[in-house]
Image 1 (cartoon, rainbow, N blue to C red):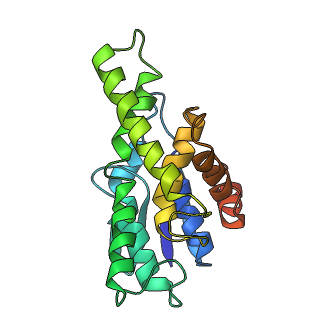
Image 2 (cartoon, rainbow, N blue to C red; image 1 turned 90 degrees about the horizontal axis):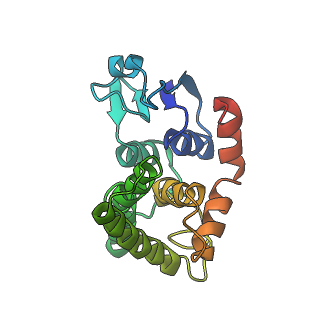
Length: 204
């Protein structure tokens, strides 16, 4: 059985929701952050970085959200509901770029925004860079969502695991006033039955 190592308050909820989307049986192991909002040392017993999400399956320990998403879909999504066939190279490459986008280009601006909420006075150079990058990426997502419910169309896919996290983080940081499509997308992702089941099982 899959073991899902879930750190509360973070991106792990989106991986747990993917397990629910796939209808998989899994053992859920929950961890709470410490007073510095860091992961507890017990997670380093699972993976040297002590990060989450991490899963264990078939004798393997798999870290990094994008890698976990890829593994779960390639291994268990037999009907290819959540990813295009690799035989359609153009669709697959587009999927692959969006899959890595959320932890690549989009991840840093969201992290900087979070850190700046805890910094007073705010450093001008970092603030200016963060504002510019945030506007760039949220506009990119806003354009991608034009006329459709999810990043690749009107159906949920593996890229929405990571992109949903980015959109929801931006929503929680109150950055979406000028990006109504991203705001609606974040609400759509976090209202899915699978996500709500994950919330109930993990306690948020």
